[in-house]
Length: 536
Image 1 (tube, rainbow, N blue to C red):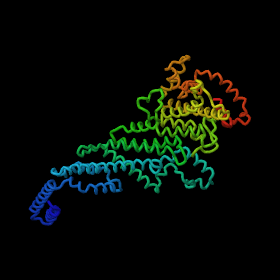
Image 2 (cartoon, rainbow, N blue to C red; image 1 turned 30 degrees about the vertical axis):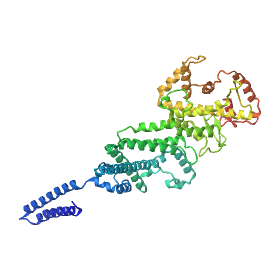
Image 3 (spheres, rainbow, N blue to C red; image 1 turned 120 degrees about the vertical axis):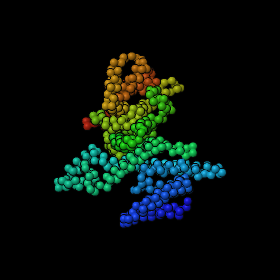
Image 4 (tube, rainbow, N blue to C red; image 1 turned 180 degrees about the vertical axis):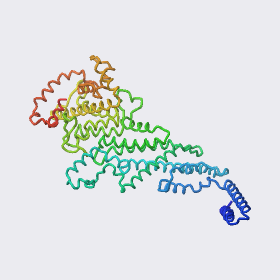
């Protein structure tokens, strides 16, 4: 049936409806006759139209316009008037595209099938891009971030300081301090549009997740597209990219507490989507965090023996390298000093964007342990122990160990080794606090086992392993001795005869001229040139 005939049928339907309704209203004597004739004409027109459309018209004809469909979808689906729930209809038409192929032309089946698959892949790419965009909108500073900024402790402290400096009349008005949002600011009339935008993004995200979760698999020839799996991979990839982006700032490493806050904010958005998806997205988040903290073979996750070719995760690797280079080695020359009294490192100049105490206190290190777990903490401790390994080098020709006898280099290296021990001690205390908070039974079990373990020389392998685990979470009181002892065992120097020379080595340091330029700082509880780290 042609287009003109379809229009005639539609016009006839409308004309019959008008006759039945209008004439039936104003003509009293012939109302029943005209209504009967009008209704019969409508029924005949609709039946005939449906039969003609089912015979000559079909969704498979949309194949010839699939490029236009793709363009329209991309421009309208996630626009102001877009409806994400229509994704099913846009994707479902692809199943009928192969019906346009002629049986006598075999090449058409291959070509049309390939076009149908590319059409579905293109639409899925656009849908997942829209899902990425909705998550990023909610995770931005204009989304959920605008609601969190008013609760940051640092911002509250800064606000109090600024308020105390300004004059009394301006202190009475919130507008006296610019750039700070007071609780409830989102209820102001001028912020109405941003809140509506946030609500609209949340509504679209939940609707899209519901639609994709309930959508049946799309079958095109021998290809099957399961939208739920695409959605899972999209959320996983988005979280991984977000983690690597927020890990670094313009200046340098992101503070662990801020990084933890940003990760929790993103996880809350994932949990919002998870309510409308029949799959465990929390497990997806754990997989990403585990892959960034540990990328060795899965079979060695719970093995204590270290692998020579084991590669670490990119995220925790970047964090660990930053701490070793900027805190332990002080590559930036910020004059890093360990403050035993405050249990942190201090610097006279900023290290990147922060002072050393703002990234090495126990609260920041606890946030680091909560993010990357024991594997990230273990990698940082291993990087620190590399400095101890480098001090004693095996001389294969002479069969003994020799050190770098240049006095100045030895002193500097020993101070760095002491800083590494101090940093590992802070990490162990932070890990122990996190373990005691999250798993108090395991923490108390480790403390009890170590307390009653026999002091055997040489120790059994199981007891030695238990002591190392307990020492890594700060359960053993003498952390430094256990850590140095474990390092010496790894390099094979625990039972070496050269250790008998250590008292002479210490005596040389105690009688050196380095103490003539050393002063004790009562504010930090240590010496001004970190010489107290040499004693460790």
